[in-house]
Length: 147
DNA sequence: GCCAACGTTGGC
DNA sequence: GCCAACGTTGGC
Image (tube, rainbow, N blue to C red; front, side, top):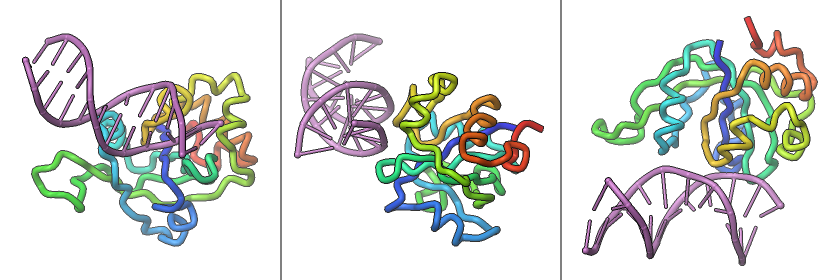
């Protein structure tokens, strides 16, 4: 199972909004970058990801799951290449993991969040997934860690 | 096809 | 509010 990280400005779309959307979830839209789009296309139903608040908060706050694989973005014309996936909230982190905390952890220095900070949808490795879950106070297995 | 100008993102 | 990173645009 692959893992991902989704960045959102809480003013636009927050973790609370994602939780409020319930088990049916919502589509993750707004991606207008080809690298991020490729990541969306690679996602499989059941993949888990981190939900990160950018700008305000700057921390990983929860776990989400892909419930529908990529399909054309309903918000743009059919001739546009952009896609969305559906995701739902799974569980919050007990302790949010802040950007500063990640920066202070040498084992996370290779995270996409460090190297490509502007990319809105990023891959997360299994090792990074387990570590961030542990730092957030939750069991990586329950969060959808390595199978 | 190169590259300067410009816009956007997001940390600080 | 500033600025670095980086993607996109457009002139040549």
